[in-house]
Length: 105
Image (cartoon, rainbow, N blue to C red; front, top):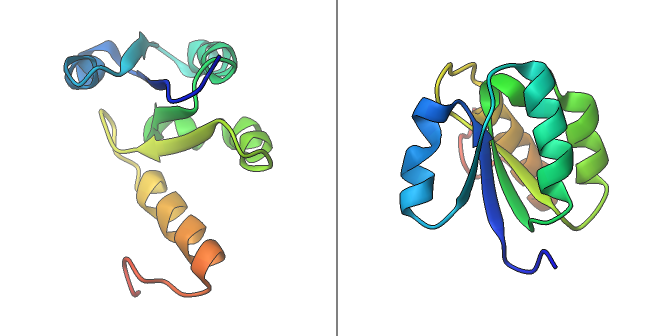
């Protein structure tokens, strides 16, 4: 059952802080392993934090998750920062609220 379970998928060197906070951590090394891990982890977790360096190449998979209530997959900056995580959050908030309350660009 996924109720309340959280996970993080990203480079091993950047996810250890999440482990300290009680989030299940799944290290990946490339786009292929990130895709496979995200698919597996998403079945059992309500919230999945995904390193933004993998979120952008996995947009097709992210879009499918966006169509369901769970899991919530959130791209976050860690490791290589691309700006995708910030843009994803901004667009999601604007879509939900009809206005950009976070970044006001």
